Image (cartoon, rainbow, N blue to C red):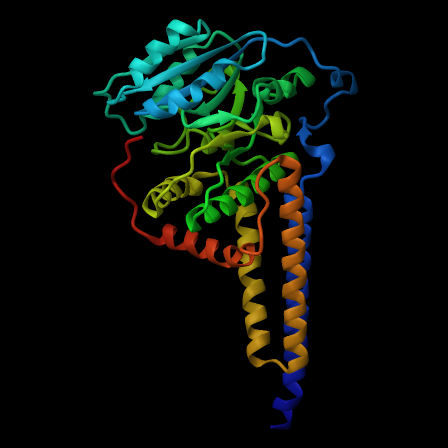
Length: 388
């Protein structure tokens, strides 16, 4: 009995030390990757020569959009792509087997805007990912070396979107891939609060890791790469066969620490229409997660460490609250509040610098609930319906 009494304080000490160690890692992770500093809104590939800091002349850009049943979104947003303040560019919209009035809208806009070019994927093309085929057709039709991708339900944050997203090419000949931020319009609903948290956390992570020379994904809503890179690597030909992956898997294969740039300025953002039902969000999330297991081994290891440390963090805190003395419980509460304040400060400062909505105290809930939702989706059986 005496030995047990002597052991309990040592156990409390071990728990406190473990929680402090995990918190130090969490602080390092958030300050290293998630904090957006003013000087890192534009990050060029490493070893960029100083003389390359003087931008080169603006050259042609091909904006590529794959559209399937996007009649309404094209009417709302296509003109904002076509009216960009940039001297030389084209917009290529690939009609991916649409069954609504998408083609009629494209014909109408093509008559008004000479910059617009269109092509199509036949409706009967029932392949595993017709979007990859649509993007490939768009790339092959592109006149220019610099390719800039977005979706039909996206609109650029400013008339300077093209200029901002292609700035790294003019500042460094090393640049072959440019990663940007694709945000979602803010709405008043519980689902939208989740979407805002997920989008901000994911963007801070993949853009922050890319800025630290560890690129692992991008989003097709705002992504750029060279046409020559796509053709040399044979596009999607060597990617695992999957419905998704036209953006993140491609970046995971093509992007490296020596050829990837990051743009996080407010003018470079694209804004998208968010999902409005939980079922739609679930299908989108499931599609994105379906390819995460196909990332490179190094990417998967780096992505696993943070959620595992977060699980350990909450596990240690709960244990301290359940079996510890009141002093240990107070220490656990203090550590929790300190981490939450650090996390909120980083997310709000970073969101403000990028020009996206700032999170509030709901972050405390989603910090626990979102990983559990993700784990639940990963554990569900995979669907065999894989079109688009």
